[in-house]
Amino acid sequence: MSEGRKKEEYPEHDKMHLVKDKTQFMGEFLEWLQTEQEIVFGEYTDKNPDTLFPISHRSVEEWLALYFDINLNKIEEEKLQMLKKLREDNSQ
Image 1 (cartoon, rainbow, N blue to C red):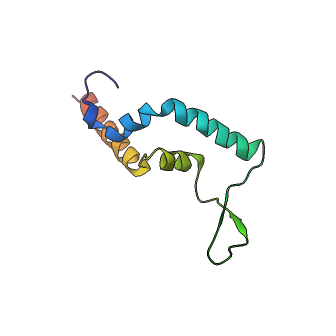
Image 2: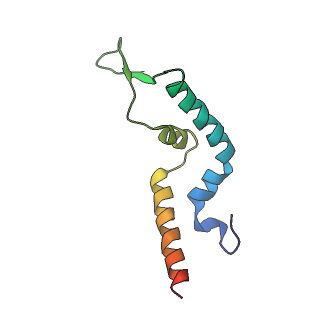
Image 3: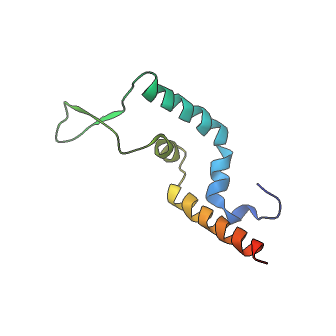
């Protein structure tokens, strides 16, 4: 956390920062599984319980956010708040 800002100012970023080392390691591992080992994540559906369908609708970042309970929409909102504050500070 940088000096001059309150901890509660960007809570989702603070939460994300606490698990940074874990997400870095897990993200690299998931990328390795998908690229080097050609592992495909899949799911069964109620309509076809005997067929495994590849899951392509989630990125590694989304899987990690889901696992660590990080809201990516809130992260984006906080980034916009940061940019707004930087622009305001630079215009003074």
